[in-house]
Length: 241
Image 1 (cartoon, rainbow, N blue to C red):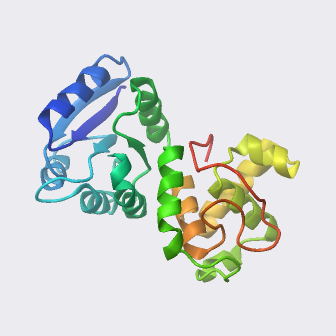
Image 2 (image 1 turned 180 degrees about the vertical axis):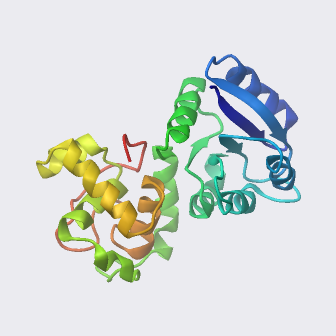
């Protein structure tokens, strides 16, 4: 069964361009289009959709609020935010609202198709370059280096789970984390699964957001507390969880 897609963007020409690319894929089908968030929510009441490609700045109801309302519903479709360089703050808000990731609007078609398939399968997708800009821009709003995490839920994690969470937030894949910590990929995947369960998080994107919000990891890379790995790259697509 093909992946059922909805395009939400106030620019009809842009929607037409995306539709041409997506319709050429044997495993994808554009089943709905909307010009703003309010229209998208209304259409979703009667149309089954797997993945929503969501613009951010639109009339009537913007993409962030539309994402929040969509993701709050049971059995909600996945939402992939499409943004531009000057709207990084909206992408961050979109992730907090429940989006499974975000990509740049000028992303090469092959990368967009890969992102859609990844989101549909349950993975989280972010654009590394945009994420680094976003985190650098938000660094003044994040807890200072060395501050204690505000979220008491982090106390539920073991020392190893906190270490894995910091590496996930720095963008390392399960394989890279396994190599860094000298563990098997299966063990790392188990740790990630436990982190998601203990913190009631949906995917790796939410792990990244929580890690930076609580100060577990600081903008610019590295752990905010002792024992964390330093360096790393901007959060990106990760296999498995």
